[in-house]
Length: 415
Image (tube, rainbow, N blue to C red):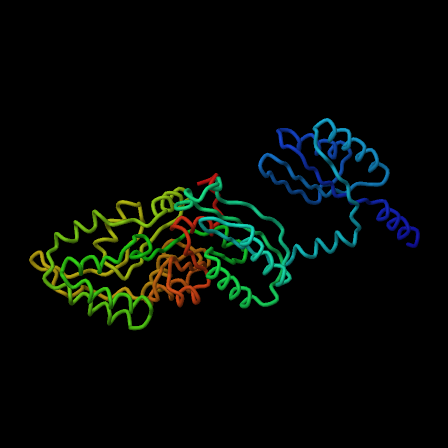
């Protein structure tokens, strides 16, 4: 038994862990050429990572070998790196260091997404400092958007997004969320913090509010202007969106003011609805990857159904205006789709589609969207009031609706 233990100890001492870092101009075949040398000596690759930044390669490989062949491996790698015109650096890794690295892999992983019209070094520094302050470690950083604009004239419709993959447990999760919200408000860019779970990678259902989310208007305000009561209805709408008055009561008051409006006005408004920036792109991508899409709106089914046909949406739940002899009566049919009802409908659609609630997303701008945002696996406040941002957890305020795609991890090269 003593002899066996001595033999095992000898074998452990013979193990060598070596980290190689390769840097230089990227061109096809670099990774294949270097890993073929490791394969020749039956080295075991324990970790590997590669990035390409403006045609410059950064490749890291951690491998296990034995002392009797490690010298030959390093010699062959040096010669091959010279032939490939790349720089190579070797670092020994102790078994204790390796074990500490393995232990870290069991910790939670988080995805931090930052986006805006333009991201600066200051933005990245502020986020990185908060990550470090919370005792988290950055495993990887990748850019999700395409070409960055070089001049201010290109900023109006530009998008810039960077995603951090972070490991560890925050010292104070709520404080981290609070700090991100404050930085986002002060610096005018968006920050999303999500735990990287299996559900994040397998979302299947997304529910949108309609007014001021899918479209850049409140339809009831448009109807009110045609009815000559625009100022009265708009004031009630704004108070409801801020959560200052009960949504259902405000809805009744606003609809009553529409009495006598001709039905033909609705068709004209529907055909001229201003879609939110990025709306069509968002729908195209989500449909392409198999999402079910729903409109859950405190607005009206007439306009929701118009968008359903135009954008290929699967479900529409909204309010039905009563029409008699081609005129609006100032009443509605059925129950009001308020905040509570939106949350119920989200859960109902998830059941029908056999989707776990953690795989759902909700996007909305008003206080009446908060129950839906809280119910979904991922709730996003879109260009929302401060109160809604604070309670929603995730918010998107600096770019169009297609910012939702970056929160889901999509890259411009894919979409």
